[in-house]
Length: 445
Picture 1 (cartoon, rainbow, N blue to C red):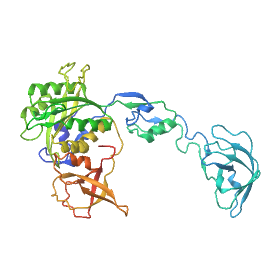
Picture 2 (picture 1 turned 60 degrees about the vertical axis):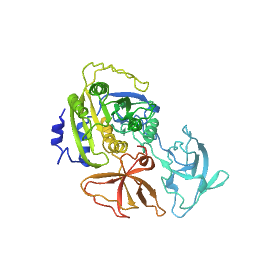
Picture 3 (picture 1 turned 180 degrees about the vertical axis):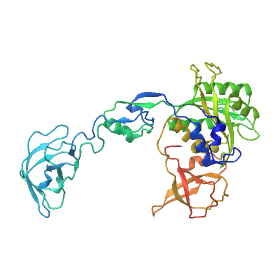
Picture 4 (picture 1 turned 120 degrees about the vertical axis):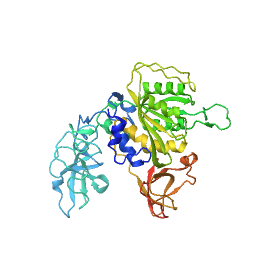
């Protein structure tokens, strides 16, 4: 396992005092190692999970040639250009069972959608395209060509081929595909255990009476929602005051039971030195000043777990979690304390890192492009994430405007936004009508 120093040496232009935002992802990709443990879950519980192994199709889908329409099946070789075709109906093929019989020249079979194509027949004309006269139908000239409206055996999946690849995140479409293969259960990567807690004497837990200079702990609930959306197993370790002994106990507890740890607060310049000292004492941790806004301060690294450690603590908000197993340690993400900065740094850096931890190999969603409805001031030299509202105009083009005040403490703006306007490191000011990149929130926040 490489040290942070060794990883940093691999990143071109690495400077912890002014680290480019686009270099953070490269660093975290090297830091985070995918989980190896797997488990088997029933298909209804597989949504959002990560496939642990390539899934080889045990059957062909569809398992036979079948009709894509309600209509009449016949031998398409009988079609002649510019001429109608008259056929005698000799039977009806229903979905769910093969039609028993033979079809001769000038004959056809009435067929339902999904029914097996009778032997020797390769074309289906939709019922509404025909004229019926007793036992005979007329197929007008030019309404179908040979092979139309027939689904071929294995055209979706062929038996013995990979239906889904390892690392695929199982969405509704993938689960539907598994069901079509008769898969009652599936092997997935186990959910990563992610411990999180807030730090600071100024933090109030929900239910506490307000006091001067204090704020309620919103960051824990932000992180909880983001982790649940991602499919992690959240471990809420509450709030820790600025006390070295309490911080050490909480960090040790988190490292003993979690694969990753997320904290908010305590990593900015001027904040309590013992928070940083404790992180360094318990593991290999780097402290960054990222060239970005909001969310400049951030800590990353690994915290070691004491073997068979059994730290104890008082319940927090009525919850208590026992530490019962030996664990090699955890990846640490020390996020800033401002609520918007927590969300932005999570979306930009932590979420992709956790997806890698989960073994997900899906390509990240592309940034959308939209025309800016307002001028945006920016100097090259840092990446800015501005809260935006994307809309579609009458001409079908996407446009975006900011939510107004972009202060890192204005949490309301994250509720109003449906995406983040991403102004890249080398980018300058934006004029009205310029195109900008947008990271959309749908399904994430």
